[in-house]
Amino acid sequence: MVWVHEAMLEDVGEIILDTETIQKRVAVLAETISRDYEGKNLIMICVLKGSMFFLADLIRKISIPVTLDFIGISSYGEATRTSGVVKITKDLEENIEGLDVLIVEDIVDTGLTLSYLINALKLRKPASIRICCLLDKTAHRLVDIPIDYRGFYIEDSFVVGYGLDFQDKYRHLPFVCVLKQEVIERQRKKL
Ligand code: 5GP
Picture 1 (spheres, rainbow, N blue to C red):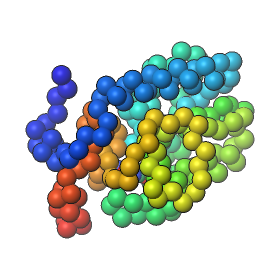
Picture 2 (spheres, rainbow, N blue to C red):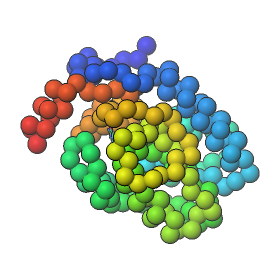
Picture 3 (cartoon, protein in one colour):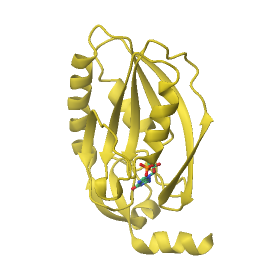
Picture 4 (tube, protein in one colour):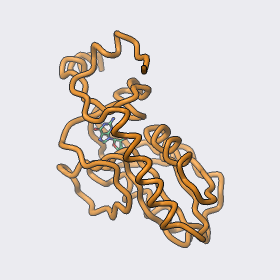
């Protein structure tokens, strides 16, 4: 039984992906990744903060040697949409030259954030770069991003939970859901 504060649940609209569905899919992704990277120098890069739970669950199911690093990215935009202007707020600690980089991202929407990140990391001469994302929201895609490992396609709605936030809250919800519209409106008015 998962404990979530009642006040948080009051803000929750539809649950899009429940905990069990997420965990089953993560296990399949980990198995595929483990097979594909057998004999390679895999480094998984967690894009902070949204991917932290996805990465944590995924990496613990990887059955081959793997290293881990974190990168912090902030993109400027309104409350629920990115502008594509991206900044690295926390850089990697490892030198990725010659390594097989797997970027682990929470959600791809326009694709602008990942496009920036892929280009920035390519300059560091890794042996390869691939993308693993939990959620693929194609409705507003502006840049074609080659997603190698995908958790789920989702419809065009703003989702939170399992790492994803709205104004830095709701990340700890153990499922992916939409917020009630009134919650988003309430927050917008406060800004
Ligand atoms: P993109 O650059 O692909 O448009 O957006 C990527 C980033 O925007 C994600 O890493 C995430 O931070 C944010 N984002 C896009 N869609 C959603 C969403 O539905 N919910 C949340 N919480 N963040 C989103």
